[in-house]
Image 1 (cartoon, helix red, strand yellow):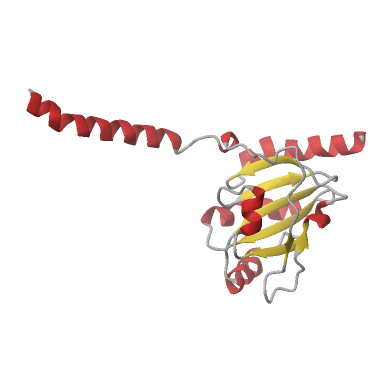
Image 2 (image 1 turned 135 degrees about the vertical axis):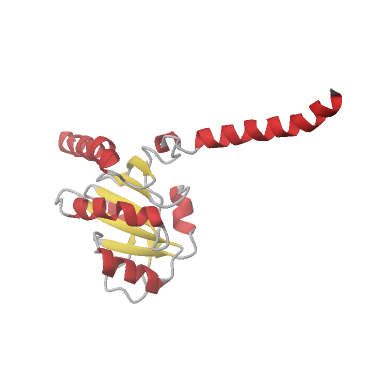
Amino acid sequence: MKRTLIFALPLVLTIALFALFASQINRDPDLLPSALMNKPAPEFTLQPVEGHDQPGFSSADLKGQLSLVNVWASWCVPCREEHEFLMRLAERDDIKLFGINYNDQPENARDFLRKLGNPFDAVGADRNRRVSLEWGVYGVPESYLVNKDGVIVYKHTGPMSEDSFQNKVLPAIVKALEAQEAS
């Protein structure tokens, strides 16, 4: 009996740990809090993607209008999935899109934007990941809605899907625009 228990205990613990980890896979991305929520965006300056004809940007560029800052990379499969929604957002005239290209080779970032389209008003290269760390990025893609005062008012973790776009991102944009009009 003791011998069976000694052999079964590691198996039971392994199964329990596996079940715990498996239950966390489909966690709600909104449960990842941002310490920067309702605080000014970090101060930064990003150079453009090398060889790309679009300018880089800085924290100063985020002031004066509603902005969405999207952290992405060419090697990121979910970034490719959400790109359609960013292209849709680019059609709006009440929000500017800024891209932080995360830890990417310049030629790969250029190819990504050339093949899938470029929704961004400006794209900065964060090759050493320093700016992304200041934003509190857990992984790509992540998007931050920044109001006209340069304050982060919403964070979306993971790729935008039709559901998250309609039920989370657009309502956050509408709410931020309403607050902007009221002030």
